Image (cartoon, rainbow, N blue to C red; front, side, top):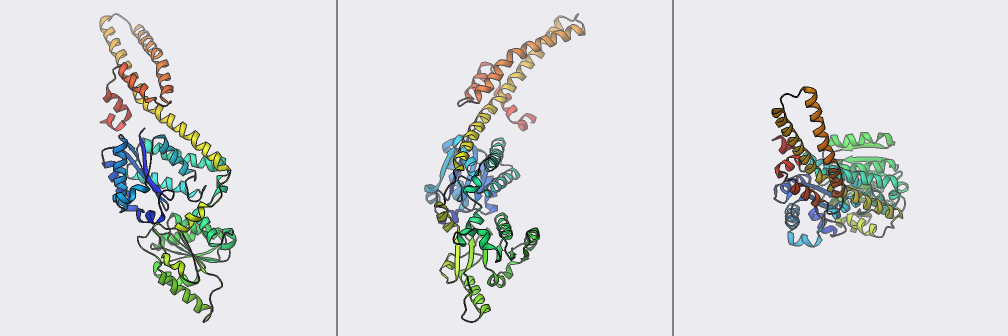
Length: 450
């Protein structure tokens, strides 16, 4: 196993850099294809969220892998390598496994313990599978990360240590009050219909929003989201982007997360909405409460200059990062760290043990060929043997070979699960003079078929 991860997150880079380095879906696809086309890389997956961009790869050379992956991240993000390098972190082999498992459990999230990251890891794996860039290592790694994350949430109280980024953002808009209490009875506007926007709409509906309007470029997708919220008892409807300016003055809280390349709401548009709100209440009479704006997009959807407008309260990723840094951590975090440590050790042992399997299979195949050749030679030398005698000899010879191979092959698999266990596979191949191509064919079924 030569797992390498190169990335940056809210822990290593300022929001301004993360915002510039964010990847559009089509850019992620191209990054994956380019990653597996360079020499050191056999597999690749990209985990990109609003506060992290990470490239995972199976590489055969560490330094060359770091150089290639760093260069790819710089080229596809549009941030120069010289500027990006100080913010990049690198994890290799067991440390890379530990990192992803910690991420899956919410230990590395902006809001510790949030569970949305599991969906994002699942999506990252699905994209890599669809693009055929995930092989055995990354499939095993990401699927196990999902299981570890689910285990952490089911066996500990990590959920109490944090919440979704949406809930945390709404809590910040409410001045620290419970989001459910603050949202109840308010009119909400959600811009976008992707995974984060869908989560926001669900949180708002369940918190008791009086009305929920979904604005999305693809109206049919917004309609499906609105229809799915009917069970929460909220009046939800979908409108096209052209209706945004008309709907904005009637909203009490706006949540935006579109993934658009540019601003969705400018400061001037927000100012126009404020003027319309004031006019609706009467000349010279301001609304009772500020217009609450929650921007969860990276890069940002809402003009940062809007926070300087009187009558606006704006919370974005940058302000959430500052607030989350002061959030208390639950005691269950230590238990989750213990789970991660155990799971990393188990995963490493399983991967190391798996490396010996092709060698063991090749050894048994070679033994079977030797047995078959010797039995064929015996048939030629003793033609007078009847069928029953030949069957008895055949069974005896095979039983002897199986017994001789059983103990060493079982033991070598056990030893291979320990650190440095790959050396046992090398020793086995050398001692029995196994053909490297035969071992490789066992490792690669496609090559074996060819």
